[in-house]
Length: 291
Ligand SMILES: Nc1ncnc2c1ncn2[C@@H]1O[C@H](COP(=O)(O)OP(=O)(O)OP(=O)(O)O)[C@@H](O)[C@H]1O
Ligand SMILES: [Mg+2]
Image 1 (cartoon, protein in one colour):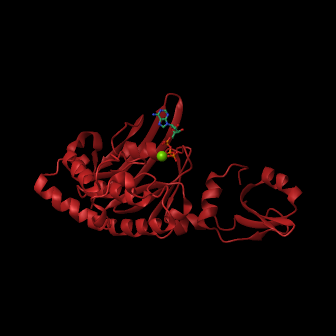
Image 2 (image 1 turned 90 degrees about the vertical axis):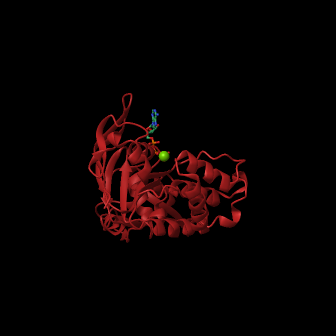
């Protein structure tokens, strides 16, 4: 069974610390990295891909440091970047053949693989379309197909659901579920609902620190008894926002219903609520007072 291991990864850009002592072990399964803009998700993925070097620490693939593995590590990974460098005027089929050639896949095997993955991502009927004419979701599936051509054991997707409509999101979810058998899949997102029914482990990155690494249910459990709903007068909102970490706010008749996060009952009329994925995100990434 394959194993990816991060040992005390630090990354600095000049004086700015972007990753702070990240250690993790990955075995086959789906891992999602949830973090706000700038929390270091892409940087960490690029370090795992051996595209940039950590300032300190190392990445190991099956016990070997990746910088010593060279070609054999490159053969084991597939990458769908945050912005796939497409050639807009190329047809889907030609693009995949081109990428496969760059990956060094022999021509006779390549045709078969391209057709196989076109079918897997449900683009076979569109294979002669120009990439510029595809929808966001279709382009993203081309991105996945190109990453899968070498049958990678480690698949990394950076913000794969950005710009997808709800139907495409569901399709993406089932595609990833199919791919995750015997593979390590890492994907980044800043959309909490992307975790639902898709991921085995949630990794929460906050300002370069790994705040949480657990199964989604357990991550939510840690928020239990800290989510409150309270009805207030509009003029009280400023005070509440100053005092507490505030989530969703909605109008409710002449009053305002505020969801907020605090370790104990914040106000006499506050009602405790079950944490949701949206709470999870807002708890970690909303601006405001600490809990
Ligand atoms: N080449 C670079 N030089 C200097 N600073 C960088 C460089 N690349 C990233 N950074 C900084 O490192 C921090 C983390 O960036 P990164 O792209 O990893 O975040 P992210 O979590 O992927 O964000 P997003 O959600 O916007 O994609 C940011 O503050 C960014 O400005
Ligand atoms: Mg990013």
